[in-house]
Amino acid sequence: MLPVRAFGGGAVVLLALALWLPSSASAASANTAALQSALKALHLYRGFVDGVHGPLTRAAIIRFQRRRNLIVDGIAGPQTRRALGRRGRPPLGRRVMRLGHRGWDVAALQFLLQRRGFGPGAADGIFGRLTRAAVLRAQRSAGIAVDGLAGPATIRSLRGRGSRTTTVSSGRFLRPVPGRIGDGFGAPRAGGRTHQGVDFPVGYGTRVGAAAPGTTIFAARNYGGYGNLVVIQHPLGYTTWYAHLATITSWVGERVRGGTRIGYVGSTGYSTGPHLHFEIRRYNTPVNPVPLLSSSVAARKRREARGRATECQGRERALRAPRGSSWIAREKLCR
Image: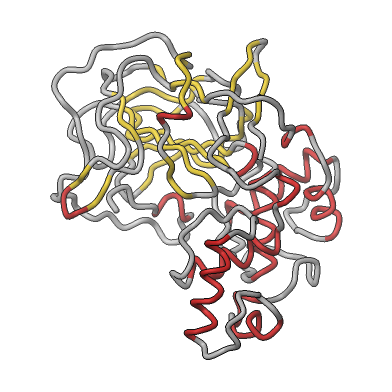
């Protein structure tokens, strides 16, 4: 895939998408993404749910076929699809998808929504509230009936070409706050866990800016340690996560530009002091943000931090998310 350059506010905000090495966006398949989603749910696939049928996908198919005593050929044919059960059916387009539906077609729909930058942040095959909100955004953008039901017209609009997936030259994400990076990606945490993002040790109340153009898909409290959290969906499957905020100023459905204010630094969730925990995810798999960050800063006003703040020290008290909460509200920071 070629990288993306997105425009907003009269300034060029650059997205470095060089991590996706296989060919181009046109090589990605919604059916392959649905297959990857099913295999990932079975803990057999560890790559991106990116719709690209590469060596990791084939190896996961082979593991599944061996587990189920099927013909081992690395091809997800009818027999393999049947063995996946509800995760392998129904095919995309067989039914009009709605809230509460699950299956292969829902995962394929979610992949198409992510690729076009509408959400819902992950392809898990469950048509929940985040997926319905993403469908509504896609329908409004396409100028078709806005009903939250994913039928033929919605699928056609997502499969068509649009400006949201324009591929041009390479670039970077903006830094959401000024200053140095503290704990980096992969830093050790208590209990053998590792850090899934980077921390910016800036002071309480520092303004936080969106790292690139996109749509806010979550802006609320997370019960898994992120505290007050904003998640922004970008095209081609990227999301950015901004955690431990003192105040959230963005809202679900807001179309942000690079530098749009989304909140202020705080110390909510599993945090020992004010800092910004920042993640970049590719089809919901955390990746190291550092190679993707430019020297440009989305929010320049900075307040100095006092002392060293960190997270996930092994003494966190588990919080129960309200019934019906989205998967993002339940996502765990300390894994």
